Amino acid sequence: MRNFLLILLVISLASCSKSNYVRFAPVYEKDGIGEIPDYSKLTYWAAHPDKRNPSDSVPRSLLNDYSPAKNVDVFFVYPTSYLDPEMPYGWSASLKDIKTNIYTDYSSILYQASVFNEVGKIYAPRYRQAHIKSYNPVGHEDTVKAIAAFELAYLDVKNAFEYYLEHYNNGRPIIIASHSQGSTHTIRLLKEYFDNKPLAKQLVAAYVVGMALDPATYTSLKACEQPNQTGCILAWRTFMEGYQEPFVYKEKFKSIVTNPITWSSQLTDVDRKANPGSILYNFNKVSPRVAGAINHEGVLWTPKPQFLGNFLLKTKNYHIADYNFYYVSIRQNAALRVSTFIDNQKNGASH
Image 1 (cartoon, rainbow, N blue to C red):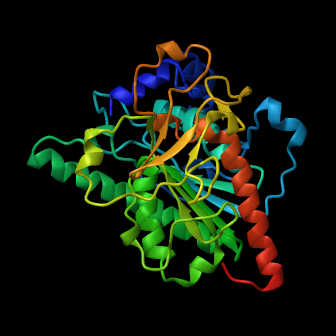
Image 2: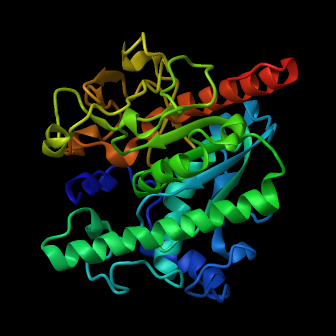
């Protein structure tokens, strides 16, 4: 886990630097946030259509073509941002931790959730996330604590989703999107609320990125096979071409892997020249032709990404850039799926 975070040296994703803390902390300190999330209060949402937040941001170079329709809702579950090796709050993040909240908002909410802001109203709940160490506990005692931390985190996500359904959704189409730990929880959320459930009729698509996803998890939900298919699941984990993490070899299933450039199960090997744009360390700059996309045995490969300063990129696990490398392509694909979903609704067609 620690190794792939080294990519922050090159692709900072607006990380929670001291300058960000100095700039934003006074605002956060006024929130008066408590330990148990109350999703009736905007304080407990990292992104919400009724509050200005980083998910509203649009890269400057895309503004000329920005025409928000907001035809759907996007429920986004962010990745781990509780990374402090000292674990000051134990195995579960504190919602009062200003540094973690700022890191969340100016990394994943800005660089990931914003990809959907042209098509939907974005809801991203704050939750008592499990510490990054929870993915690699050592010994029985720590394992029990890690499991408990994941359970607490999922309980918050579940409660937030139920509050969203009851108070905000009003029957609107839904995109589910997530990354890393967010996907750990989203896999469960989809099983509990969408798989063989009436709510599946409202599902535009689920972008469940950064985690292995066993296709046998679900009975009715299937992997997307075409760019405009709806009611289905998209997932990928990005590595350098030719590299396979040891933990991948240990997986007892072949994960769903979607090609985030072609979005087709038939076109699974595409050069970086077909990539319409990545967002790297500068959110306002779209960099074309950075990364390719090759489906390989349950993971996504790309030749070493091409951008200024890529010689500093030593890691072969591009987990933290799963969204960033394919930012514009995801943005375009979400728009296509929403358009198809809306057209199908008008014509009375199903997924």
